[in-house]
Image (tube, rainbow, N blue to C red; front, side):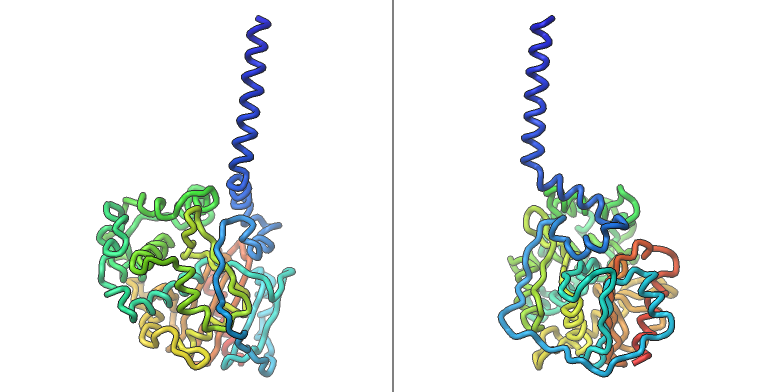
Length: 387
């Protein structure tokens, strides 16, 4: 009996040593998983959204070596009625309003600063759209009606096998995907844990096999479609999205900071929502698009692509917000009115008719509450009209 107890004690000690060693070896993954599981906690969400590099792997975005482009101060503006309450209720962390490229209002809230690199969430999708438009003009991608498997053959046998580039641009791939951020077991949250634990997004995507409709027939906002666009771009060029985006777009904007992308364990960028930049640098990208792809005297994104990507071309329902090529078009939009939008209250609102760009970053845990999205668009329009 004594010998058994000694052997058992020895086994238990070895098991604890092994467990401790495994925990040490996987300490970064464990730390990232813990960070992901508390990413949206009320007491941490504001800080987390300015420090995403503490929870995820990242890769830098190169701003180039040019000077910082000026965003000159213009005449100050009076915020419209209800704006101060809206800022507080919607947990806004920064608000920047441009009129004709001039700053008319800039404010930071909840302890954030102008230098903070705030997470874009799905505003990043609109950046990827701009990049794809450039590659299409360069004939590195032949046609929007090419199958995605022409450029990403690893998707053969997946739910994307018969989808075209246009289908995924329009969020009309037909793939079955649960985008509910409030459901722990949803596909989008499983993807987040894959990102944190050292998995690869390509493997996650190729494992998707179920569909809800044939490609092109039904609009369903599923962020996995944007990852497929990233796979297409990488397959067409043999290069990474961060390198391409830096070279073809960002280096011409005179950014204050390059910022960074979140990545998976294979250093593949989280293109569907992983850009981190300052509020002013988001505004510079918005101004580029507001000026039909032109910035500092250079045509960066083809003008025809800006027009095509920001009109409602997806098969959305008539009474709902419209969708283009990774851009949103509000209900009853005026000509040239569209926006990039991310969860938890991130916006780049563009109104070309009024020559206005508005950037909003937030940490709004009630962003899915009925009426909140419409309320936000109403306030963005009120801000634009007050100038």
